[in-house]
View 1: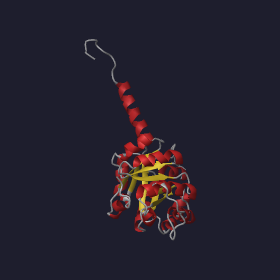
View 2: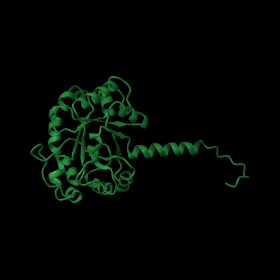
View 3: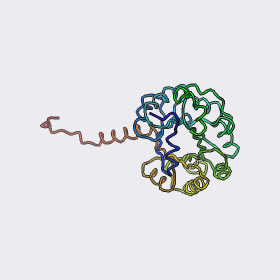
View 4: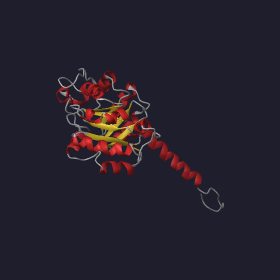
Length: 266
């Protein structure tokens, strides 16, 4: 079970280590429970491009509480309503898409934290049930805020974004960044200028004392990203893992020689 007063990811990062994050696109509490017990350091419920919404997230966060993975969410947009509602449900971190300017980032960070460092409204509801009646006293130091850097504009404004106080770190969206530079959207990018951006972003983030994260399409690329300094790495999603593995099994079945000599027992 999670320690109600401590975010495990913050401990991992304080040791200079990397956290491995699972990704949930399918709105299903059983899938969430399974992922929560697999050994991921954290699991993110995706409300932006996944099929999840606030209502389906309730049972998924409850299911994640049966495991050891830290519950996070990617919100559909950086706006206070959904960010505060998801925090009140008990997620311990927010990933916000399309943070393109310092002002975008300042607003995002303010939504994540209680005064005096932010403008989060009080009313933790399930979070108080999950983490204890003193949740308010410990929330600010346990909530993670990750701003997505995924456009040319965001790259151009990176220094200003990284200067925002109380921002935990940044999270690269390689598909949108690729399309922003006129390349086909994809994971595991090796083409410049996107790959050069990735290398530059992780260095600048770490120089500023911020966590750098990135979404990955393969284990090999994920390991490469850890080697160059990323401390928060996600691998595909429940949907992509399920569909790609099922497809590979089906291809294996269809490639098997189905001819029988009628003498075999099976």
